[in-house]
Image (cartoon, rainbow, N blue to C red; front, side):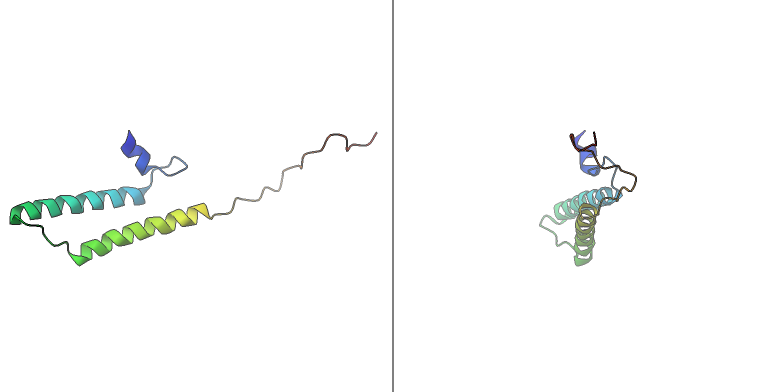
Length: 89
């Protein structure tokens, strides 16, 4: 399913940060819609709720940047390849 692909990172592991962001986004949208329908006008979104959503988005962006900038581990037990014709006769 497509929702599971959204919740997975590049390594195929499920991301709890993405899950929390998705739950907060859907929850805020649902609450805003219910309140707006009850008031019969567009309701204001509280600043605190927006700051929480913004912090979740920022946290995910920073995490994504940190994952992509990680250095690969150095392999010390790797033998360099030998080129053809460089051996002794």
